Image 1 (cartoon, rainbow, N blue to C red):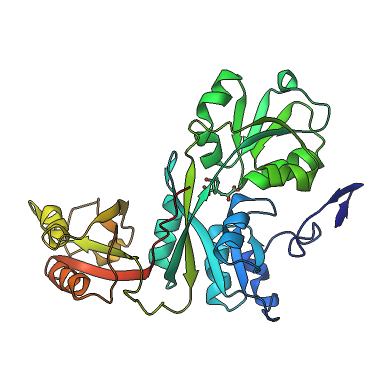
Image 2 (cartoon, rainbow, N blue to C red; image 1 turned 60 degrees about the horizontal axis):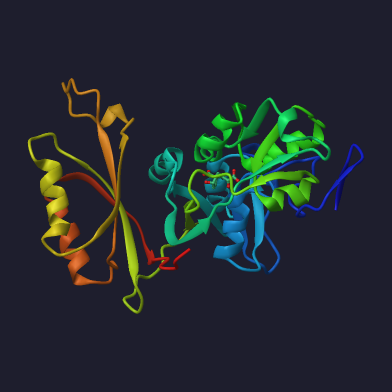
Amino acid sequence: MISVVGIEFNCCSYCPISTGPLTSARLANSGSGGSRLRVAYQGVCGAYSESAAQKAYPNCEAVPCDQFETAFEAVEGWTVDRAVLPIENSLGGSIHRNYDLLLRHKLHIVGEIKYAVRHCLLANPGVKVNDLKRVLSHPQALAQCEYTLTRLGLVREAVDDTAGAAKYVALSKLEDTGAVASSAAAEIYGLDILAEDIQDDSDNVTRFLMLARDPLIPGTYRPFKTSIVFSLEEGPGILFKALAVFAMRDINLTKIESRPWRRSSLRPPGSCRCFHYMFYVDFEESMASDNAQNALKHLEEFATFLRVLGSYPADTTML
Ligand SMILES: O=C(O)C(=O)C[C@]1(C(=O)O)C=C[C@@H](O)C=C1
């Protein structure tokens, strides 16, 4: 239990208000230790990412981080053992920042977890829906509740995470501002739930990646997925040919994403192209299978860069 300006929060031991979640600057002094697996997530206690971390690694010590990048650095610097970070949402789409960070850092994807996100409209005790003029939350959460928030005519303001929004509304004792966050956040920060399940679609699922310093040894004992990132030469039909290496081997692609490639120093000399892309592809095959290995050997014929981000058990649960 943490007590701040007269308010007590039933929070985890990692985010005392005096210090807050881990930041890049504080990583060096936050050694690991103890026997439980330490798992970094972005946000504060009550964030969906914390619940996803607990679902991915039951009984873990979930360690809050202020930014996605801090979670990457915390794993790389041995402050924690794993990170669990969102990569895509069924309503809001991709979390682009984490695609870019996967490329910039050297962590391996060792698993995925799907988490059903159920948003609530929260406010301080006594505040009614009609009192609200403004609502705070993570941009993804605001996007997922577009319909309800528009109907209520609320001004939206983006903050770093849903639970952080709830905490701010509680600490500031705001009476005209609510938060979109989880029912867990309502309980932790002592807020009332004014409306439940306010996401635009009841099937609101966020897919999280489990990241580690070492890769998992791929198997074929259960359904595996593999995530890769590659870049291609410029030319007609090159992307078509690259994707054909999977189609001709009957390998199912589950996701494709393209992101700008910012490392202009690697552009061919004299090239006037400003728009270079990295392609991220997830496919349903283990790297332990000859089929996947042959597909990637074939892809290397067109790719100017290719990296396997991880081969890991697919989360096949129906939510
Ligand atoms: O803000 C949170 O609670 C988070 O865990 C972040 C996050 C995201 O980054 O997409 C995770 C799940 C939901 O889709 C909304 C927000």
